[in-house]
Image (tube, rainbow, N blue to C red; front, side, top):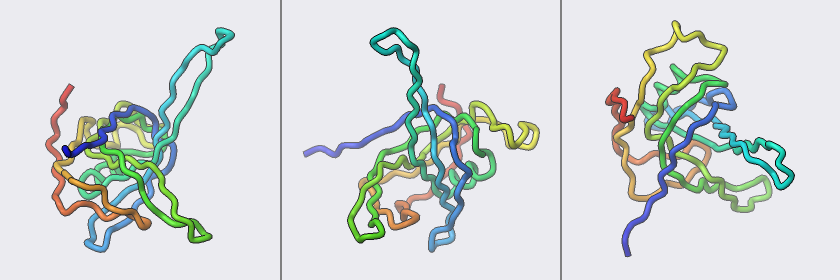
Length: 156
């Protein structure tokens, strides 16, 4: 049997403040939501907007850059992998939530709270992090043991 993967490419707006934490190793982890909207026409020909919300997580250098450059309202293009975070609700019942582990991102437009002059240069930031299996999430998810690097290149 061959190994599979789920790659996510998304463009949307950050819909929440960046939640910053640290792993036991001291490495930074950030969590935020991303809203992606699309327009379509319904059966009556009316234009309808549909917005989907996604949970995003980033680690190490990618997390540090997101924490420095991104705030609520920022438009991002990002890539990552899709996992199902496992957790227990208040009644002890097992739950799963889809989550994107961000491996690279590009700031397309800044949020209104932080002017562009205060920000670092825009560009794509890519993680060199690779993983063969999705780790389990218990609050902040433990990342794979690889190091991340910012190669500062723009691939498109």
